[in-house]
Amino acid sequence: MSDVERSADAQLVARCLAGDLGAFEDLYRQHSTRLYNLAYRMLGNPTDAEDALQDIFLTAYRKLDSFRAASALSTWLYRLGMNVCLDRLRSKATRQEHATDTLETWTPVHTGPAPELAVTKIDLERAIGALPEGARAAFLLHDVEGFDHQEVGRILGIAEGTSKSQVHKARIRLRELLRRPRPVAVASDNASAGMD
Image 1 (cartoon, helix red, strand yellow):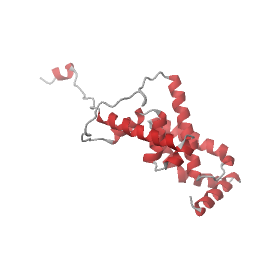
Image 2: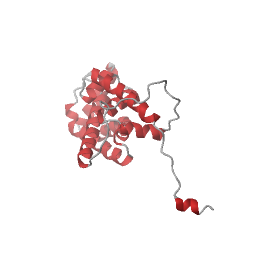
Image 3: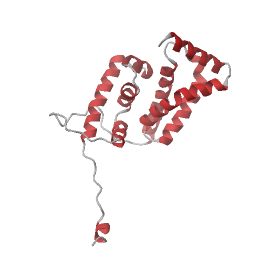
Image 4: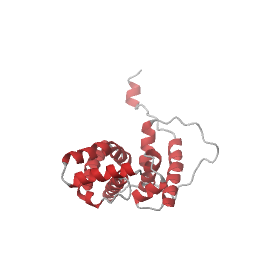
């Protein structure tokens, strides 16, 4: 982070802490789109992402005095955002029994060269949503948002090596999920009987 960026972040935070609502609106405008996208990819639907975005900025408003400018304001906000999303996922998981396989127990079926893939955005979003939360978080921050592994580690509170491992495992798992054949819609017998 450059000195100019650090100074701009510090000035914006100081204005917010002084009660300047316009400054908090500026903070929201600068960061809300990327934080919404992160929440959407982590939580899987727009309603949950919008709710999470509100929680992220409410948390930011309450904790802004704890920002120390050791990292960029955007990194600090991403950490808050990721924590909100992970808390929501954990809460949802405890309310619902959801059986999924984990990366640790998964073994690849295909060992030859990768087949050609025709992947839609919907397929990719579903595959990302199927990743375990830790791998999903690291993958989204690194591969989608462009943070380096050290920043991902700071945001998630994990070691840099753990970030690298989670991203690697997420990529492998995504390839497997995207290779699976798509379900084919089958017309019901009643519908086909009316076609005669």
